[in-house]
Length: 292
Image 1 (tube, one colour):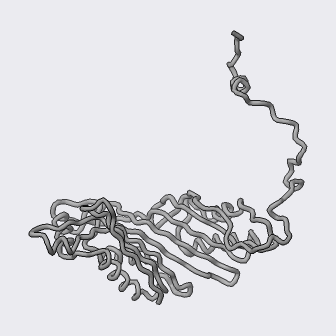
Image 2 (cartoon, rainbow, N blue to C red; image 1 turned 180 degrees about the vertical axis):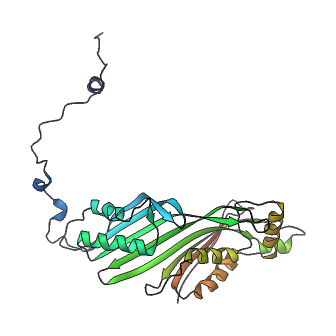
Image 3 (cartoon, rainbow, N blue to C red; image 1 turned 30 degrees about the vertical axis):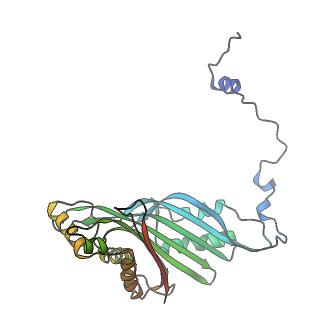
């Protein structure tokens, strides 16, 4: 058997099939390279949105850094073949200071830079992440870190903001009214997920505490709330409050919808409640949409 000298990394690479680079014939200077994306002729259709998604990127939500997920895109004219994808990340980087603040103001700045650098009419972004905040227990007031999922979405043109959306998903407790009614004692309850997507009036001034307002609105209409830390006196209050406030999924979205209609900065919404049923293998859900 042939004695192999595999003492260097290069030798090991060659042993496993690596080869030397070929003598290339294409230019290596950027100025000499063909730019296919910038070519112009009739490409048949305008494109509403072209860009990147499923981008993981650090964000700042409230007081804490979190992990965000982004989709960023621009429009594309009929006579242009494509966009320069690298400029999308470059635009997001302009607002990165230990994370991009997940606010409408910051996202509008990113979009305007992106739209101008891309030489396009419109640009859009959706950014989501987990919002962390301190939440005290109901009786002992022991604080722990709670969280909800938030989502900010915008589309702008040279004339201004075309649409703004704010989304939130929060976890709550729901107790079954039917179970309470028919049982001699107790009632089944479960964790529910409330998801809302708000159409925001682009001209309206959003309150500084809009996340807190929305979270409270989703929770207060449920049978009871979830807490990071519960002592026995807290647990007594939580379970008794649930028993005193039974809710079907249908009840919950109707109560939340009433409160949402009263927010003057909201134009409309999509709303869903999903229960992880504790006495079934399936979930229960209710969904509605409303425009003022």
